[in-house]
Length: 362
Ligand code: 5GP
Image 1 (cartoon, helix red, strand yellow):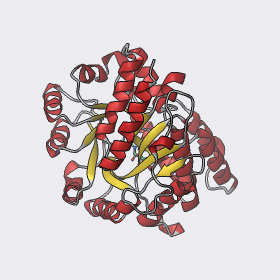
Image 2 (image 1 turned 120 degrees about the horizontal axis):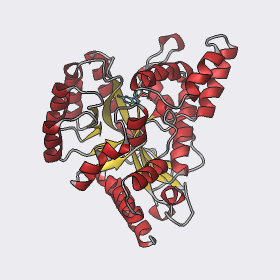
Image 3 (image 1 turned 60 degrees about the vertical axis):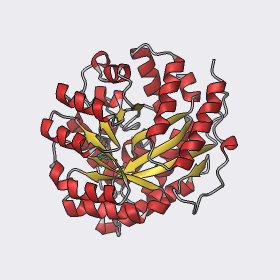
Image 4 (image 1 turned 135 degrees about the vertical axis):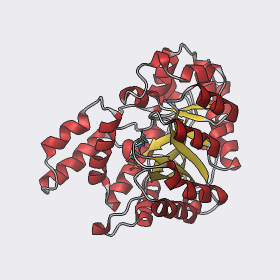
């Protein structure tokens, strides 16, 4: 675990509100309890419960959103989440979140996202590069200052890019609004769109117009795909050819063939799949088959707070469950650089970081 923590890594599938520290959630719940908005004792055991079905996870998110959806808290959780990932040597983080409107406190989707960006600016423990174009980067890029992997020097710098999530409960208009917001915020590090939310809700055709528009405008797209059996939707998603997909749990032969021939990279979230019982055990996890087929893969956390995990833990878990050595795990981490949504300059910098770290392996 120590070794995987010291290795540079890339995180491409992390939901902001799923990655909050338990201690922060409990503190927020206590405050709302004191104000009489919630009953703290009811909420405490829900936050601390470790095994949850997929259905229970979405109920938990509704509770988390009650606790977190004000500007100052959104800024705070963003700052903490970035610091936590940086502390385990994540050198590039693609953080996704669903822009939310809360009229009672004057929150629009834009002001929610501004609060997220404020959180990126507020990070002081590490240097954060988050602007996708040349404006507003806090300090100039210098890869020599970057996390010096495998020698104990950590957390000096992290690249962060944002994905705006469309929630499957949203309408076509709301999804379109999110895409337009993403376009407006491209200079602030927004690089793409994610489709997520409860997979039992919503129809693919509802989101398609917004996703097509996003693609036409040059945004990159990742889709939560195949979390529950839904052959028709899975096929339509694969035919859409997104830049990446998340999970890919409930595929049948035909979908595996389609996926493999399309070479769409898969964001694999082992702990999340096991905890939500989307996959019954690691020995039958599709990671093995895809890895053997040399299909593009990246190990991710999904919701490090909700599932009490970290990227290092996911690497440790994969190494022991699938009998992979350090070099193989390092190569897996390095290969993820190919699938990031940031531009070529960032890719080059990350490649340099991994090349340097590779020389120090052994
Ligand atoms: P947020 O977008 O509010 O920052 O992060 C939490 C949201 O991400 C949840 O409400 C849900 O829409 C989405 N999410 C988090 N984890 C999962 C997951 O495992 N599957 C799906 N489909 N959506 C998720």
